[in-house]
Length: 518
Image (cartoon, rainbow, N blue to C red):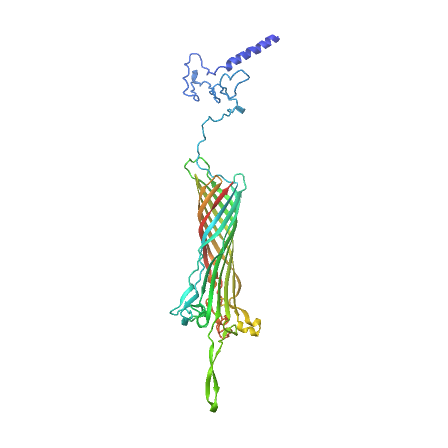
């Protein structure tokens, strides 16, 4: 019985081996015509069987390996390659066996790619220009000695003021860094800011020891604003002197924004296509503008002495002049008299700080093709501008002729200059609603996949700021000017304040730097 059972197994195995070595054939009834040959290895035609019912079709074998080893299995325990292809294929769950690409083949070029970074940063050198300092009234004049620098006189010329004071180019830097937080790199955050140098416009004038040329600081008097007045700095009849006018500006900004990527192109649009990416920004922005305008003048008196004749009374009441005596001519300063060669200094200072707290939205994009990239950013901010105005003025003198009265009598200072007097000296604050649009366009050269060198143009605008030159009030109560003959008078009209006149402001210029992404 055992021999009969083993013989049955051998017969079944022999039959299976014969069936395994043959390709399957469709079953057709006797007498039907043979099916036509297949056009290709993947094409099979179905021929209806007798009675109009299609015959069952078996899928053709799948060639997955090299010639001689269609299954990619290699030699099989010394028995050589399998006799032919197998169906279904021998991979896991019937999947084809993985085979490497033939030598010499390359993946197709699917066009440029925007590689979404995990983190990014940028650093730029700024070469910007700022809007000039507005000065709507003359600050310094010159004229013939007899015209005393008064406005409206035939020989009077304006040296400084009555037009804006520019700053030329301003250097600065800008830094930004950010990161995406999710796996798809769609949302993240960014922080950054910029700062410019403190750029000054300094003007200096000085006369000779003879008081040539005449230098004067013009004003209008509250007694009659139609009649000009002036504070003489140098004149042959007064002395020699100098004037320094210094205006400066500095800007600083910082911001923090959330970043949402709304579009990023993927490969597949062709080798000549442009790849692009767009982000939406929203967050907080701080901007600070610090400016000042200082006017300082010094005059060394050389007022000619007053010649006083000397007389004697002779016999019979006859008065005879025996000679003359030179008496120093006094000059009034804050209610006291000083004499040549005393030195008088007058200082006016106007400082303004604009502190802006703003909400900000923006759109940022990158377009890349080959080794070139185009970066652009547009932002719009709006919020509160907290304006702080400080006005200070002082005058002082040094008179060695008063040393006899003690060291304290030879030196003196008092509050009040010429444009900054007791009428307007102080610290003031004001709040304004402002808007701040900004745009940047940069062209980049992709040095590597992660580094690009950029050059671009930036423009920033603010609609309402306080600037020092606009806070000057040329109409002055001369009774509050220490270096004036009318100082302390009580019958003159009082002066008035000119505070927080508003101007617009802009910064624009070039930026040079690098973009990094990883």
